[in-house]
Length: 435
Image (cartoon, helix red, strand yellow):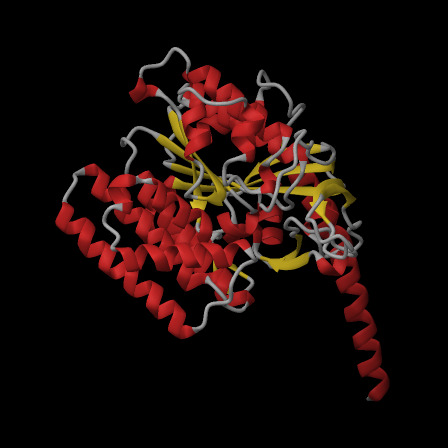
């Protein structure tokens, strides 16, 4: 009897191995048949843009993700999509994973208001250093040129979605006379003191300190309501909401802080989108982990909240990479100066990883519309199960184990752009400071 059990187990395993061997070619054939090749990423006249345009036609918000920050091909291709949508589908608001406060200088620059050169404008803004690259600067310059001959109501606008740095928000509040004048002397002094604490490094506020600062925000909400300055009141209320968000966010552990950060970023996108016309599009440029509309590390990502609000009018486009390089900083650096440098991406050898399969596709760079009703069954069956997936932020990582996360791609994203090889984003030629 025992021998029969052993024989049955051997036959079962052989059958499983054979089945897997049969399934893999079916999957690759299906991807090869349905994938849309991206023959180039660095100029606009390529055939796949028309297909992407058809998919984006009825969308209000398009999330443009990235598996790694600091990747040139991601930045250039997302800029390419943005240029297409501006020219063809009335994209009017470009939002970056950066502080909402402190990006007025870039928005003023692209509105063709008097300002310094692009490098200085970026340096003095709150644009995160991961995006202070030549590729993003080129996009900003292009938008400025596009806006040149347009009346104000037709110009593209630029903004942020995050509330990561409290001192930037405080400085923004104090710079606005209409808002700053609503502060009494004690409130102003307390915000200035918090700003000074930030100059020494991010302070870890305790519960009592948080409650004190949150009380100031509650008083300011009432002051803004009484002042009733029309549209300025709406903007001022959002300024104070950013301060409130950053205080709540302060000094939380990893998962709780990311959970609430994503919730707040979605809230800020929804607020900004509500200020656009019904026929105007919005793009949100952020990490894949933010644009996902499924759980990410067991918390609801930003895209979950956007999907709930906009349903099928939100499209999350994930960008993935096989191997190559990125512009990131080394957390083990002795100088601790957050200097960005070229860093190799860990090679993916895990056969369960999405990238392991994608590297075998006949096209080096390709797009798959995961939301398509015509998505082939082998692809659908493969994608609906969680697989390992590369996810890197702005830090260099030593090995494959440090970057892979179990992700249900089909639940998380509506489309995926894959690049077999990538290079690092290019630096701008100035000292980028803290961010």
